[in-house]
Length: 248
Length: 180
Image (tube, one colour):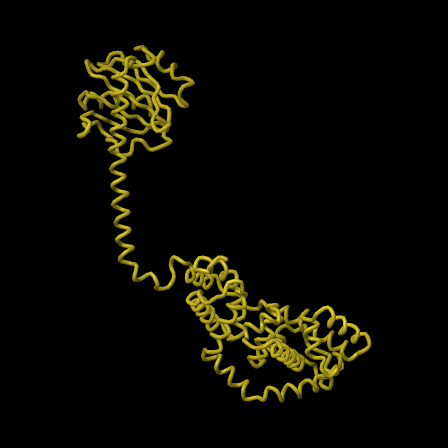
């Protein structure tokens, strides 16, 4: 290595850009050349000083947010403008589907609740626990369903407790109580609030147009109640009041 | 290989934000211009994302866009004019011999003096020093950003450091007795 071409070599040496061989050659030269040694020391000091001031300028938080917004794929520039009409159409289609499905779901819920009621009445054993005594019916569910509920006192009312059975709705265990009002049967379906069953079901007793069953649904703190019957809505509502009173 | 797209771009380009801003500030010298420069760089890069070659250095590619954006801006054009008035090669030869170990005393502890010295460098030397000493890029990466051969990177770096030493040298003749 010659001293008159040292500047670039020494820079490359300090920047770690030399091959092992060349770096060794520079090192050898430095041992015998005080001029180049001084140059290396000086340049190394300069580099340290430069690194000290390197992150001198930091962007503001607002500016960072602005740039983030700028380069976020979903919100960027104008390439999507030609697609706006198509996107609007798509959104409308999705809305129609969602609303349609939503409507279907409430219709389904009504039909499924009616099915549970009819199913109980149609089976040979309408109830699994036959008793008019609420103190017999309620404990029967113990260990069969993961919740408990309160049964009202039917004495002095037009209602008579027939019994209860275990039902499943959307893989969820629930209690079905059968109550008679004169010749009518009323199903009281009780489920936990894990899924929102009562969405789309009537909040006050009324006759469903498609199934012709009267229905009323409500939620207590942790339970969902659905009453289904061919009795008139007034009778359903009265039974509903009794259950609401003991299951606040 | 995964194709670089807008989604990947965000993930790859956002971490460079601070570096790009810092570099933009060193180039332009003020906040407003630095912000414009960074925003324009991101916009251009996003638009040109298809021209980015997979497997090549993304940071160098972004820096190159920033640098080119600066050079075509008003302050960038002004900065270039002042450089090209000088005779680059001639000045280089002169400096190589004029910087000697007699100038070893440098006021490097004074950060403001260092910043002023960098800011005063002609743009072609300033950018070489910024990329090498500030961003710690390799010569190869710097060559990519500046679009010059590695030999040119080496000569510019050498000249840039010599200019800085000159600017930061404490003239022994002017030193007061207290400082000795």
